Length: 69
Image 1 (cartoon, one colour):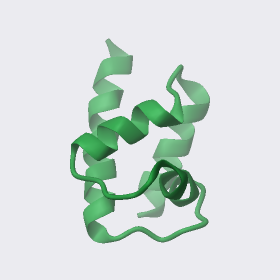
Image 2 (cartoon, one colour):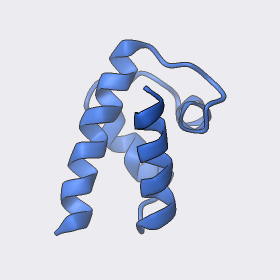
Image 3 (spheres, one colour):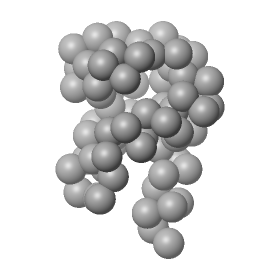
């Protein structure tokens, strides 16, 4: 789980990706956190459920494909 959070933070810092863009993909894949909760989860302030971590993993994979191309 910490690897997902680290990957998300690295993506947001290194790429031209806004947090809201990542959150929208996460939400589209079934994530349930509010954008403020999502931000707190990415920065290790809140703990997310397994369902939310799965949605984040899919969103990270999808956004990595978009930014790589």
